[in-house]
Length: 196
Length: 185
Image 1 (cartoon, rainbow over the protein chains, first blue to last red):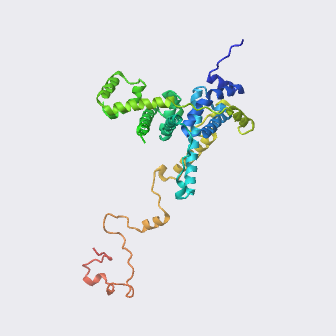
Image 2: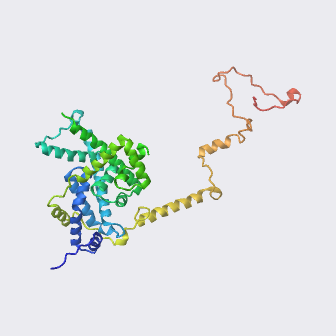
Image 3: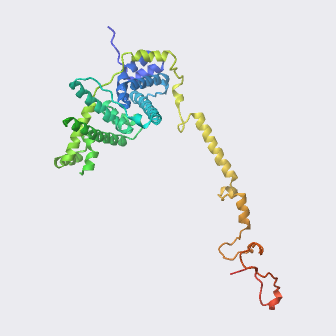
């Protein structure tokens, strides 16, 4: 029985650069969920997150020759994804501004959709939603650093390379992001304990 | 250690990156500051909550859609050799060299235009030059070298009482007085 060879990321991208499309598929399989999770925390919706992950892999396909083996492949692919997500957020901000400016004052209140859920489901969903909302409410540079550290569990050095920011700044951003997050989640916990 | 310093080091403490001396100071601060102790607990539990949060995965048909997208020409591979992605000052080589050539040209032309071998002389507009030439050269002496231009008084448009205009000859006062033209002070 032939032994299954486990190639490193670098070996796979080098093979892909030489024209091996199976190596590309293997890289997609390795990184699709990691990137999805990262981007979802970044933009907040699954559909948009999946589109951005697709675009990231399209970029990888198109610009494979830009990769140099001096850096980690994971750093490179996360940098692409992070840049695409930032672009998407900027576009969304512009769309939101123009949409709101087209609405009348009384039209700017939104209805929150009501879902039928059991109490148990609601508590679980509530916590998950609140975490997601708390992360979303952080400033972009805090959010990115926090997601990469606490969700993707990348090293400080890798985050520093991905975001192209000095190591000390990254450490400081992550610390401040965590302090802000605990402040936001503290209120959530208080609200949940308070009887209605 | 004060509370600000404590908060600065919360993550380093959680990730066990504090030096021994900082660790002792940090832990002794926890003992007497209830607020900071609560902050530490809060940060720990929020980090745990984030780490334990739901992992989101792509949909089942992700690869199919991606490959379809690539096959249907939405994404044509860019054929570049590995070494050709080089950039200078953030520009493609040809744009970088064109920009540099333009800058050098501007500098050379500027030096050529400047008088006295590149000394910077304030540039004056032609109208200003005319004005400056007619103005007195010694400004600080208080006395202009040339008599200022005085409009001839006419009885029609002057608000002052009309002066008697008469010519005074130098010999009128026995030559003792020299006539100084319109010098009022």
